[in-house]
Image (cartoon, rainbow, N blue to C red; front, side, top):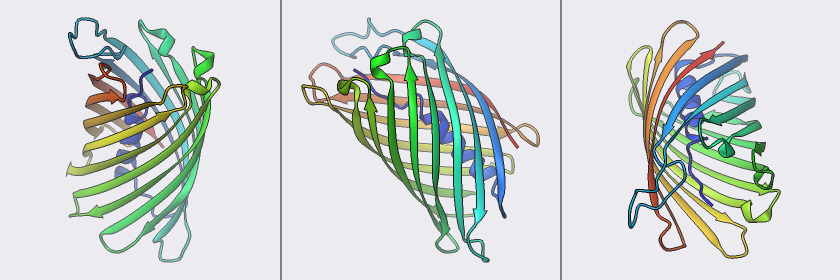
Length: 262
């Protein structure tokens, strides 16, 4: 049983980039779509010790689409309601048993707390289908973000997330918390750089207690190519461990994607 952020990380990073590059001043709906090709150096989660000889790599393609609605809640436009519906799917080249698709809906509030501080809280519900029926699941979650604008081009953001995932087979059900910090930088008007660290802890409801922890360091660059088109490339290093001895492993993910926002 393995867990890491390789499916969710690109979505989170890209969403952050689009919020920075496309900041609404009034009510509007944004339509987003993207394709991303990624390489995972240890897709089977084989332990690092005593040898990495059994670690296998694979490429996978991720497709996503979403609609995001923003509307101000006050005349000063410091409070916004945000609603989103979306879908995503991932298809692997060799390990197609890892293929999965997800539908998601979320809603929440964004608030400008001061000239340099802002916050956002979002709740979500999702359903996920895989090639293994026992892993198919439904779930809910919530995310709290606090952002500090350090200058016109640099910001730092803290993220806390909770998720309750209920699978068809209880052994694959889990609850978990994720803590993260992101540093965003706009070196050029149409270029966005995002650096970050996150720690995700998952408690699986198996007959034997199974707790998994994933630490991720990542970097991503997003470049606006035209009015509605973005090119993005990313790298993530992940260190995975659990309460079972001999299961610790690392993996690296390289990705390149193209997205459209209108």
